[in-house]
Length: 132
Image 1: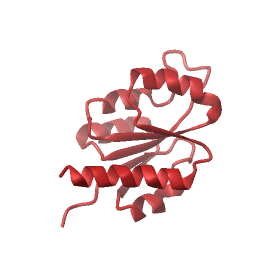
Image 2: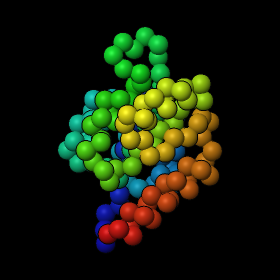
Image 3: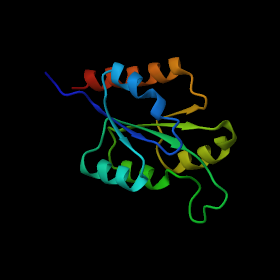
């Protein structure tokens, strides 16, 4: 029996945390992290199949546009890791700028439509299983 794929939740604003049961129902082994630095360390040690993270922009960031750029840069070297972000519609323009430079596989606006989340993760799970 194979081990379930790991899904890393990076919880900045709790947007991702409410879906842990859904992730598990879809067959993912869930790891939760609150610190972006710890998440980067986990990704470097053993890249997960999926990362789900809250995306946000604050105008007082001096050297970056969002909270996720360091994590996104670290995961670029793990091409099999899928990246899903939750974001506020007001941050769409910033998300577009970040995703033009760094890979983001899917983005869902808050509040998340659970059926879209489920469909995205199910598709990724099935495509990963088919490639084995």
